[in-house]
Image 1 (cartoon, rainbow, N blue to C red):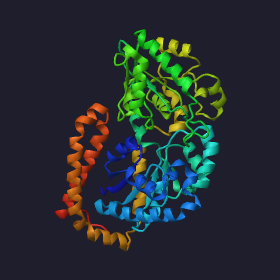
Image 2 (cartoon, one colour):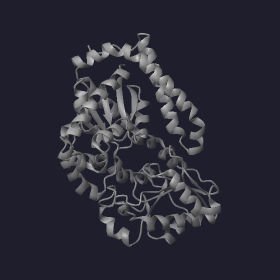
Image 3 (cartoon, helix red, strand yellow):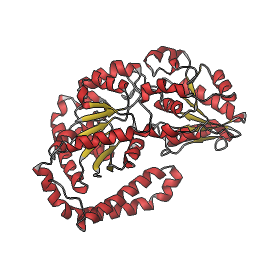
Image 4 (cartoon, one colour):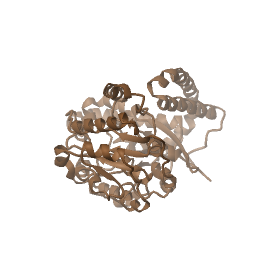
Length: 455
């Protein structure tokens, strides 16, 4: 069975990539998004990182052209490092990948978005789809999405319906075989904390909004109440865009003697799916992981109340409309404490119809469907003369690549002790493994076992 070689941009995409990496029809190599984002900002200026519109500013036309030329050369370099059949992105709205399809096409390589986003709030569907369509329309060759609702978003944003397939989400396959939790002497509670401006209109544009701070603080106070009462232990998972170190220091001051004795913060590289499966109860606000927890048959509490919540509720993910059998709604700090102190029944199987509206089908085969699409798209493209020329140059390039990979492996091996202290074990392990893979690829090319290409 032939295997498609996938070069994947890793931008908060680890869970989906691990699912793809385990598939027998795929070979996957990751490229960290910083490899493209940093140069893009240096060439085009920091303003491009502040929203979709800034990238399209006519004032940076020359800088955009310079970056596009640099990116074309970088795609060639990545191909020399490891010949690939298809480029995979978690999204093509990022400013630093907007000209990536054009660069890949010069090699005869397609670009496919395996869309990482899942849940679509009402305001996102109504407002953000229009903004994306105007400022960052779909430019890749194909896209897989988790659900019909995601497909609707991209159609509203102007994408061609024939270039979108609903496949389910690879990272959710794990929930198809999840077993009910087993209660211990103390109830294990997972709290999915959040940015203070999550899903607030205008957020994420340097405004520093602290809209949800009172709600978050009250939620944390309720969690500390039940920990001090001895009935629960709480693990707090930060959002990937939060600074874990800053949050851990704040929470340690707040928890006092309970810190480390009932209240802990998960490592940056902890897999949210594993945390959900290990929990008895999952508490959160505006996060797809609440749907995931219902899919994993865990007891779930939507902690949302107050005047500010009432003001913004219409535009939020509609968890307040969830069937009571699938998710409990804590409407105050006192109600949250009472819920955590009582027995809560995990979500029953009939909830699938509700959560699959957001997550798509969870049947254990989403990765199979995505892999099939990637192979089909890759097989429909033909190598160009430019790509064949790169194939001829690969052996010479491999000599320098081997030296760089050996140096990188040494650096990341030396970083392991510090990573254990700072909760960065997975990050360092990934970088070290990437250097090892580079070494193996370079050695393979030098001994003549690299795959023949370009026919």
